[in-house]
Length: 126
Image 1 (cartoon, rainbow, N blue to C red):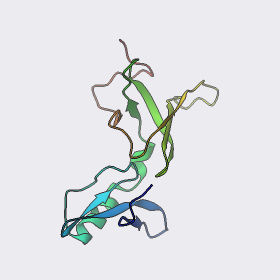
Image 2 (image 1 turned 120 degrees about the horizontal axis):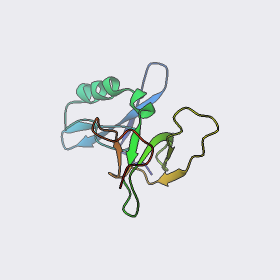
Image 3 (image 1 turned 135 degrees about the vertical axis):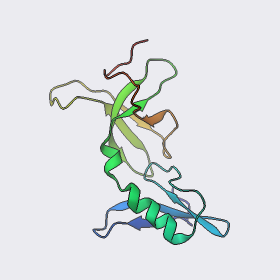
Image 4 (image 1 turned 45 degrees about the vertical axis):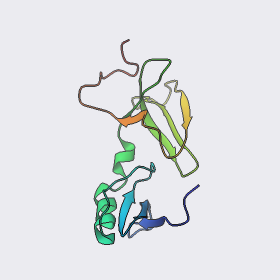
C-alpha cells in the first residue's frame, strides 16, 4: 500500500512514471518498482528524475537472484503497488514455456537489471 504522502507523477499522456515522496525539506523520486530514483532534491529535480527514467526500462531484461537456485533471466509482466510479477525470458518465442514469480512491492533487491557480464542464457551456469 502506498503511503498517503506519496504524490503520483505522470507523463503528459497520463502514464504513471512513479511517485514523489517527502524527505525532510526535500523530495525523493520513487520509480514504479518502489525504489528511490533520486537522492533528496527539490520538487522539480524529483520530477525530472522520473521524466528522464521514463518507463522503457521496464521492458529490459532483468535478473532474479534466488537463494535456493541459480539466477534467472526474467522480464516484467506486471508492476503495481500490490506486487511485481516477472516471468522467465521467452526470448520472443510465443510457445516457450515460462515460469512466473510474484514478488513483493517495493521490488526486492533480488530483482536487478541485467549486467553486461551476466551470461546470455535463460538459466545461469551453477
